[in-house]
Image 1 (cartoon, rainbow, N blue to C red):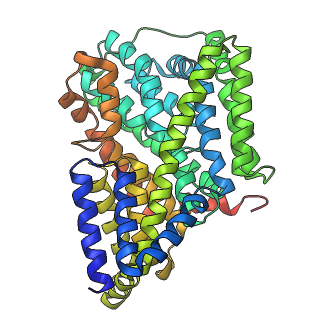
Image 2: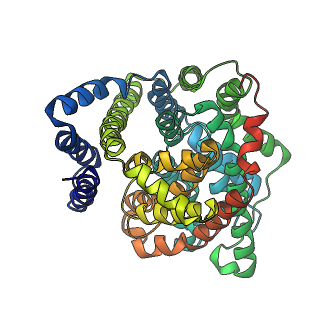
Length: 437
C-alpha cells in the first residue's frame, strides 16, 4: 500500500473518530501513531512518538499558556470583570443600544486580561445579560451581543489560541500578539457601530435609559478599570518594547493580577486554589492536544500529502487569495463542530507546508485564523460561546433566540475578515514598528 493511500485512509479514519465523538487529542494520536506504524514500522513509530512526547511541549514559549490563563483567573477574582462592565455602562448607557455597546467594550477591556473567549462569555454573561433584560432589551440582542463580543478576547492579546498557533508554526508569539491589537479594536468598533445603527432604526430592540452620569461618576468609572490598563501596559507594552518575551510577560501579568486581587481584598485560599486548579486542568488539555497534533504532523509529513497538495495548487495556478478564501470557508465550517484549538491543530499539519510554499506571511495568516476561529465560536449548530451563554441564562432565553441574536455580528465578522484579506497592513503594520523585534 502506498504512503498516499495510507494517508487517505488515516484522514478518513480521523474524520470517523471525531464523528463518533472521540476526543480530538486521542483521535489525532491514534491515527498519527497507526500511520507511522504502517509506513515506517514499529521502530520508526516508537522513535518519533517517544521523542515527540517530550519535544512537543518542551518549548519555552509554551510556558506562556498557563501563565496567561492564570492571569485571566486572577483578574476575574479581582473583580475586574464587573469593573469593566460598570465603567463601560456609565460611559455608554445613554446612547441607543448603550448597554449592548457597553458589553462589547467590557469584553474588549477584559480581553486584555484574559485570553479565552469561553472565560469572557461565562464571566461577563452573568453580569451583562440580566442587566440588559432588566431594561427591556430584546432577548436575542442581549444574549447575541455577549456571545459574539466574548470572542474578542481571542483576538485581543493576550490570546491562548495565538500562543498555540505561534509555537506550532514557529512564529514570534510577541509579534502575533501585537498583530492582533488593531484587528481587535476594529472588530469591536464594527460591532458597536452595527448596534448603534440597528437600535436607531428599530428602537424597540433596546429601550432608552433615562440616566445621565455626572463627570465625577465618569472619572470614578475610569478609575475602576485602571487595573486592567496596568496589566495591558505591563504585558503588551513590555512585549512591544522588547523589554520582555511573551512568556516573561505572562509571568509579569499573572503576578500583577495577583497583586490586584490582594489590593481588592479578594485574595483568599479558595479563590487562589480554584484559579491554580482550573489553570492546570486547561493547560493539561491543551498540552495533550499539542502532543497529539505533533504525532499526527509526523505522519502527515512522511506520507507526502502536503507536498502533493502544494504541487497541485501551484499547477492549478489559482491566486493565493482564492486559496485563502477557501481556507476561511473551511475553517468556518469546521468551527460549527470543533473548538478553536482542536480545529487549528487538526488542519495546520496539512496546511502549513502549503502556506510556506506559497510564501504566505504566517503572522498575517495567524490573525486570519484567529478571526475565523471567532466566527466558528458563534456559528450554528455548535457555536461554543452560544452554548456557554445558554448555560448562563438557563430557561430565560431559548437557544434559537441566541443564535438569531448573533446573526448581524456574523455579518460584521465577515466584513472584518474581508478587510484583513484585502488590507494585510491592518494586522502587519504595528508588528513592523516593534522595538527589539
